[in-house]
Length: 330
Image (cartoon, rainbow, N blue to C red):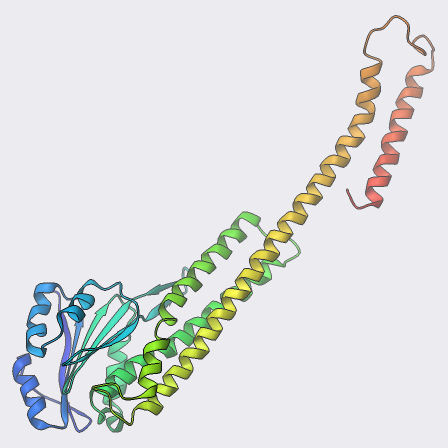
């Protein structure tokens, strides 16, 4: 049977403690303790599976609808009883050089955090392990979870940007290689790279607004001393977005260079074709004149006319060949 609740635990004084399996009892225990909070992690729940969580934590129906449907833009919304955040983690697939994105929703309340994961790109298990290994940070309660998740996702943005940079450098080297590679395949690779950068920008661009709000402070359910932590995440996000913008501009330049190369190659081909056509036109013209079967034509009965005409045609063709060769048309 599929596990909807991936993990659930109460954290008190920065350390994981055993708690009741029932979510209502666990939440009551966390609130009674005062310095504790409950963290529940879910993976792609259905509406029926999420109903119990919704009622126990009094989550806002609009936020619940967004969490269930997924396909949301990264955002930060404040409701009466909780804070709702949406982030889009991304994954780089080295086998196919592709970028794919998932979705991660966080409900942050006074004594609880509920995370809802869609896709495979959210590093929640690793984040939970890192937080549990750092009790001082975990003491900050639900805010620590929001910070750690945001930090892990944004740091991974930088890693993926580095992978895309390597791919783009290889693509750029192929475009400017002397052989030029396969023009059709190169154009397809550039277009594919453009799509990957676009997928990246859809994930990394929108969080700038929510992180700016968290950096400024005065956000409900977020610790008042958390601004420096979110400021650090925001700095990393800005650096990531700058890298993505640079990749996009470089891809546009590579595409322009590739199209220019294609135009130059086509012009070279047309010159070569024109040169060969011009050389073929001379013997064709002479042969066509003497093949018209008129009764009265000069040199028809001269014994040396054939070798002279052949020599004349060969000479003209040779001169044209030298001329085109000198001009680089052949």
